[in-house]
Length: 231
Image (tube, rainbow, N blue to C red; front, side, top):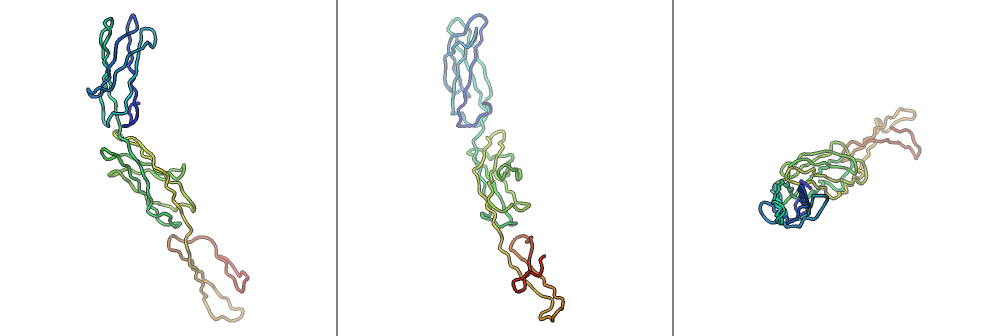
């Protein structure tokens, strides 16, 4: 894999071709002139041999990988190089400013991307289950998103996925369960005339208040247990 992630196993395949016979000899593989390992080529097809070397010890950065073939006397020595990009591992986390949160209350989700090397850059996608809530750009390794419209009542499975950049591998956070609860309300009933006289028109005003958001729904007014109207 190129690019790869530090700490993960990378396998280099060395292929040798000759014009008249299958190459025989030994191969040495180095990373930035430091020995990785050696291998003995075996026949892969007519006039072709190959062998593999694996390592999980490459550090983040661009590494010069060199494969040097030493022939057994019947074959001329040869070599090849490639640039292996090794991206740093990252850990992504997401936290909430309010858990649980009241319906229509402000919820601020903060995503942090941690790494053992330089500060991660790039973008993060925040999802609620399979639905994308937003994409934010990292600044100093983190970004924050504030809900612009209320999350529905109940539990929401929030995850954050970091896309990675040239020097950092992508990663996905664990699931944050964001619970949205119903909001307590206070209902006040007033009359435009009290006391009133028989058959006089009376107007009742109902005020419904809550600590967050504007309550919606319906109100029914009762007199002696019987409904006299709704709005």
